[in-house]
Image 1 (cartoon, rainbow, N blue to C red):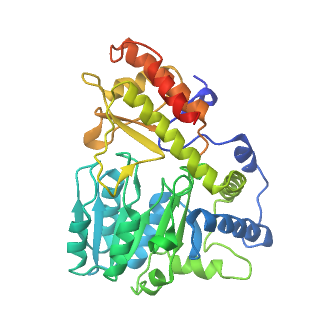
Image 2 (image 1 turned 120 degrees about the vertical axis):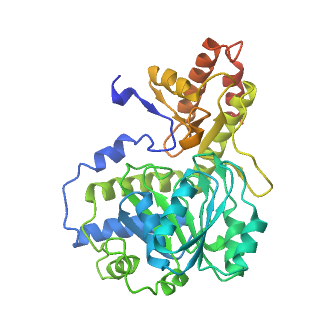
Length: 381
């Protein structure tokens, strides 16, 4: 099948609009000159609205993991106590990253289960330099309580480092109001650009905490600030210029749509997926409490009884639709549908219709139509 005909309905990378792809074909410019400075400034201006922050914003030539490592690597020293919240694959990654630099206190929960804030507070009472958490855990389809975690971190004088890789640009994120000291987002998720860049906001408190002698070299956030504060805004090292072109164009699309409208679209798309699953008797995977919620950018469902979710993935691929399965111990047990960035309602309906067809062939549902109708009802509200 031609790749151009393949519909990406996974939690990133996302479909990239032709205007963004065309932007990448522009001629190279001097990355120390005025033209690049203007591009970088424009990106940071729009990102400030996406992040809802007045903190410094930087763009790194590296995926979201690079910015996660920059945040932890610049702040944590070997004896610093870092509380790492884990309830999914990417929380586990944050924990593993933090363990390379600081003394990690793992706060681990079953993947897809809610964060226990009382347990977090008990650990904070013993002291910590920082708390790390994934806001939107795509491996499990759960939205974690960033606002409450930020409040607790501030109460006990700890920094809050948040992975917003799959929430920023697609869901409500209020970096300043929530007290997030470092927030990270990846280009290939809700921002709607190709993979390869990550963006992060850094508070004054986070910079003040960068006291260690040996900061990372390539991922040195102090170096990022020094370069960004020059008369001509730049990066410390050679940036991926074509990806900056793409990022700028993607951010223009976000600005044209408006953040409120964009977030509402993501919420409605995810709600349509959940309604369709309910109509087919398919159970959502996450277990929620009063402080957690279903993700609004990727939905995670339990595989139907007697059916491996890898089979569903393969059947969907035959029709040109790529969805995601489970990771690690969840492989075969859950399936996930991304509905972020440039994914349209038509894309969501096409995906749900095809899932219904596969389930009908496999005897999971007895008739075609109810799931699609349930989704349409949500989308037409």
